[in-house]
Amino acid sequence: MIILLQMILGFLLLGIPLGGLAPAHADEVPYIQTPTNVVDAMLAIAEVGPQDYVIDLGSGDGRIVIAAAKRYQARGLGIDLDNWLIAESRANAAREGVSSKVEFLHQDIFLADFRAATVVTMYLLPEVNLELRPRILFELRPGTRVVSHDWDMGDWEPDRRLVVEAPDKPVGPEKESTVYLWIVPTRVAGYWRGVLAGPGGEESVVIEFTQRFQKATANVWLRRWVLTGSGSIRGDSISLSLQRSSWMPGSKPLSFTLRVADGRLEGEALDGEQRYVLRATRLVD
Image (tube, rainbow, N blue to C red):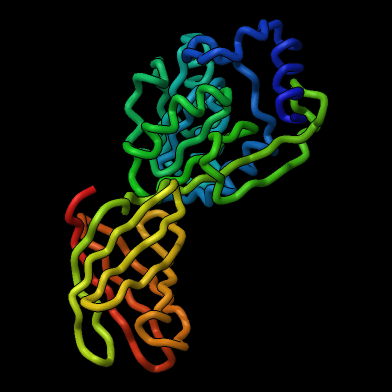
C-alpha cells in the first residue's frame, strides 16, 4: 500500500493522470533522474565488472552506463526514445572519457534487442516491467542480472532487495529507494532421462521438473522408487535436495548441485564419503 501511494503521489507530482496506471508504452514512461548513490547501489548489487555488458532500458542522460564504464570498465549501451536525451548522453560520455566503451541508441525499448546484455538496468514503471518480463525470462541468457530501481516484477520474487537512502530523489514522500536484483534462471521445466550413479552402481532415471521462476520441484523415478525434491535455480545452476526415505529409510536428503547447459544437466551430491552423480538429457519441455 505504501508503494502504491508513493507511485500515485509521484504521478501527481509529475502531472501524470492516474489513467497512466493503464498499460504503458515506452513514450509514456516519465524521465526521472536516478540519484547518484542509487546508481552506485544498482551497479554494486549486480556486481558489475570489466567483463560485463550493461544495457540500460530507458537510459535518460546515460548516467548508469557511463558510471559502469568509468568505475568498473564495463561496456555499456543506453536505449531511450528521447532524441534530446540521447544527444545529452553522448555528450556526457565524451566528457567523462568513456565514448569508446558506451553507445546510446534512439529506440523503443519494446522493440530493442538487448539479448547480448550480461546486466540489464531499469527505472521504468511497474506495468512496463511486467510487459518486459517475458522477454527477460525467455530471451536473456541464464545468469543475466536484472536490476530495477523502485519497481518489482510482480510475483517473480527478487533474488536480492536493497533499500538505500536517496535524499536527492525528485519524487515520492520518502527519500529512499528500493533496488531489486533478479538473476535470470535457466529453464528446467519438463522431462529428462538419465542415470543416477552411486556406491551401488548406476540406475536409469526419468526426472520431471516443475518450475516457477527460480524455484523448482522434481520427481525422480527410479526402477522401483520415486524420489521427490525441491530446489532453487541461480542462472544455469540448480541446488536440488532429494528426499530418499522411500528408497533408503532413515537416510538424509541428497543435496545435488547441478549445472544445465545445451539440453543436459549434470551434478553430484556427497553423502559422507559416498558420491552420487546425476546426469540427464532433456526429453520434452
